[in-house]
Image (spheres, rainbow, N blue to C red):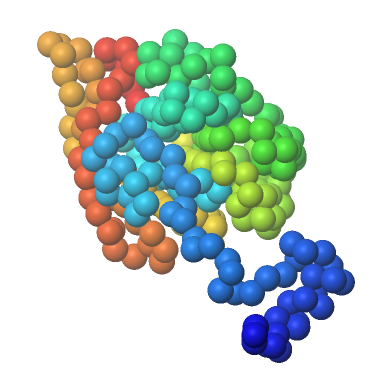
Length: 255
């Protein structure tokens, strides 16, 4: 003889009758949660140091460092991995206006699977990113850069308006969102530095880059050696540090 239904079974059955069979179930009937989806960066040493073996999908990764540290190269090699391994479409919000198609192609980026946006107004940038995420259109989205967004007309208010629903928009998409946050070098007309707390409530991962030297091929600069510190909330002490040799697409080019 089967045991009579428990009070929990009765409650679940009532909810299912009222709201549908998929609306409720017993807690012990749910499958165990699998590992979170990640996006490999294409750099095995860095992937091994990341909490789940890659950049988190459906979350924000912030990349911080001076312009010579290789953040753009790291972002583009990650885009190439997403395109090659997962067949993802990608989008670059090129607010810095520095995207160079031949250099990206040399780093493995499939330009036929990459959209490049160059909005001139913060409201347009917000609407474009919101639309891409709401439609689940891309598997990786790179914003270059946070200070340039803040420098756009209506930039600060548009960024605040985007950040409010960002977690809700991102989670179901499986999109890895990389936000580049360069630090000023004093050598270029850099925009104002973005406050450190701008993405603190949303970022699942922060990569802090610090260049340690140039890689040379004869007299030419062929790449940059950079130290990458992996930080997770509350972003106090690095959980790991690795050194990467990041190639430049063209000798004597700058990162």
